[in-house]
Image (tube, rainbow, N blue to C red; front, side, top):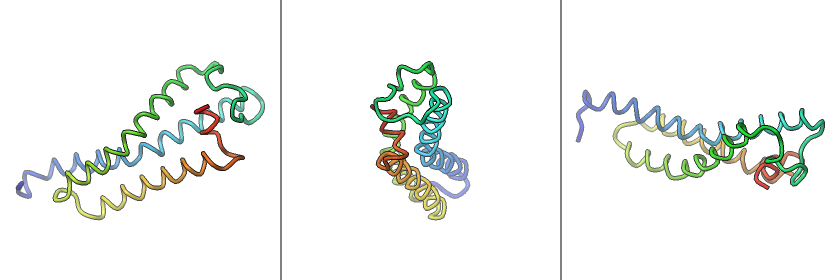
Length: 127
């Protein structure tokens, strides 16, 4: 077991990593939303699934970053619970609650924007 003086820097690193992992879905959602806004400015209308194909737009770098970020969002499903198990004695409950609610908010918004027909730009991006 680590004593209080030697675990302080490790605790800080774990807290920052936990918060960064919790923010991944929100950051990815912001990126997808900015891609959809950029596409709507370019097209003149809000994109709908298969109209147009997101890969056919002239935003290759933006598309690739969002596409690869989807893998990070998926990996965050394992990263945050693993960090919680690792940090049971290093991080107090308040920091874990904040990270958990931030993470859940991100996933709820992803599912809301995936299933609401008027705002289903995530379905458009993934088509």
